[in-house]
Length: 619
Image: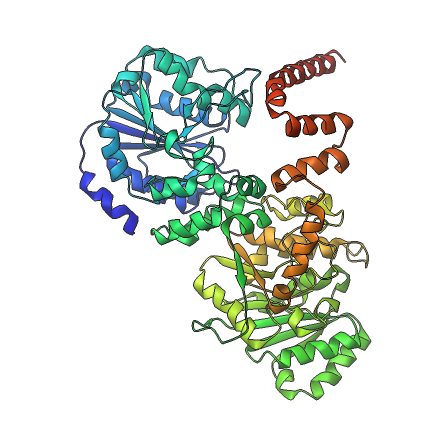
């Protein structure tokens, strides 16, 4: 890969340098970006120890063993601090004190998005420092996690290099062995990441960042100015950039999609990057942050047409839908095989009649009785068209209901050319599993209300299906009655779940069918594939209405969307209260005073929690 080549001149460096790589994945996976990152750093160390916090599958362990000298698997206790301490004890404190260098790093970033060589050269030019890192976080007032006035400026802990001067100092061992208990992410930041730098500065040790804070925007350049860090040659790209709150990033003027494009242009594989995000990201957040929205124009057949066959499924619940299904298949000659599942006898008879008038469609179509039509079109696809779920073809879940009365309303299956464009996306993006239309606009009520009160049911069904991907907060990434295109493997996590649902679940009006639709994108991500959404001609025409809708609301609110959400939540959300309203208004009108009061809030909150705990133990 091109971004590795500049590092080759440093290969062969001698000395005893050890790298501890902390890995944690709740499901025990090791995604492709992990061995790529470790492999890129092997040349400047002599030994690699991977510490795994939590479970690891046999396949994942083998992947780690291929790039590491030692793999230590432990219980997920103490977060990153506990893992590093376990690694240091595994090496032995006497051995650690004699090292020529120690790298403490973890799986929270992609690398190398730029060569490591220039970074090592810049570090070698500052030999007086006892430790160094890639980037820094600014001082914050007040401390965001402790009842203190200041969180000090500090090196970020995802990549720290410790030199012999500090390794040989007994204070280094004392720091780790006397660490306060780490029971949360906040504890880790408060007691390690934000403390490490100042602690050793106080003891007389010096440090530096290769990419110092003064050169970048924001308090946290790894998020707030990731594009500039990449442009300046920082080899590490934080994964959090792509699953962080899109409203925060927008507020900071950050475009994660542009950063992703720049990283790919620099030589980092797009599918490795997306593969390192899918299992830990909410579907809609990933689509927004990674820029996974495409436009299907229908103007011309794409040059790189898909070599995969396209098969189709439609659920028909009425004679009108029967005529629509056959007419739509007639307009899509690239569909090789189709299954039409019929909800009842009249629908079946209407399909048979329509096929008599369309022999070309009849020759490639099988008509079946739907086993559980009340569960909706997705469940019917999995239950009634099992033969289409095998092989390497693509599956078109063809919509025939009210949402696509006009073919133009169907973004990806409204014409043969648009379907070819959508299928071609799977050739361009090897890890693509699902293509969905964007949210409908005209007459829709789904924006912000897509779960329709069914999110708790979705969580329960996701657990039954073994889907660990975070669910979208308010509106799932889904087709909302329009067609979608997928690899069969994208729906695999839902297959057993649908088969196990009861007759009561299949009753019309139960809402389970709509909930299953909202779980298709999480299932796709859970299978290690990514989703993209597409705009068709009707969606482009509706964009002006979408702007108008938003502006009508925004005119009544603070200017920034990042401020609009808490402003509204304080007044009308589930946590609305007079206190919340007062606090938000104070933050807007007197931000300095509001900040100065935060340590008081934290002291009071901590006292309340301790009292509650004591009360609970006394009962």
